[in-house]
Structures are given as C-alpha cells and as structure tokens.
Image (tube, rainbow, N blue to C red; front, side, top):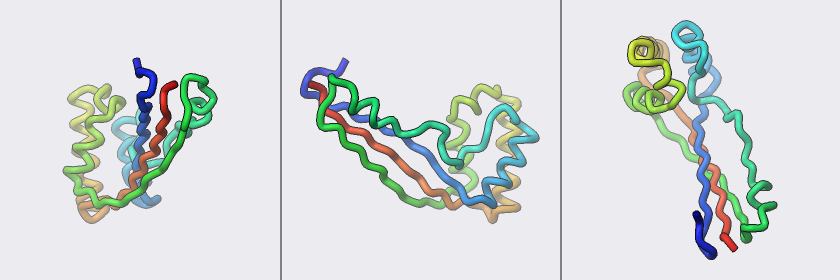
Length: 128
C-alpha cells in the first residue's frame, strides 16, 4: 500500500521493429508458436493516465514517454523474448525450437541484428 505523500510510479515498456524484420519474425511465429506473437509491435494496451487522474486518492498526475533506439544482436534479442510469459508458457522444447528458428532468421536473413525503438511510458502521481 502506498502511504500518503508517496509517489506512484508506473512504467509501461514496449519495443518496436520496422516492418521487414517484424514480418520475418512473424513468419517464424506462425510456424513454431502461432498462439503467441513476436515482440516488436505496437502494444495492445493503451496508456490509461485518465484512470489515475480520475482516482481521488491521487494528485499531481503527470506522464512522460521516453524513447530510444538500440541495436540488438540475435543473442540479446533472444535473451529478451525468452523472458516473456507467453514464450515461457510454450515449454522448454517448443521454446528452444522457436529460439533456434528465430536465430536463423536474425542471423541469416536480417544481418545478425535488429534495430529496435524502445518506448517507456511513465505515469507519476502523488498519493493524498
């Protein structure tokens, strides 16, 4: 429970890939894990700053979106996606097959790396 005068801080992170690498990765997912999807697309959730602003328990609600770019090697990208809950739910055998297929596409078809735009939406509010 957040004490009065404390600060609520909510961080919502997502990564975006360009269309070509996203399409290449999506093809792998359709074959190896059609019930999940590749990371790197716009999020399905929206920034719900209004819900925090409408809550009478909070004041001074403010939000910011931070952006940056990064080049991920195949190892870095695969290390990231294997931590996502829908990927873990595939189980070790299917996840390993997915990772192996993604590695081939990233290394052979996409030049060994992915250019990724990262966005973090931050909501801050003071508890009354």
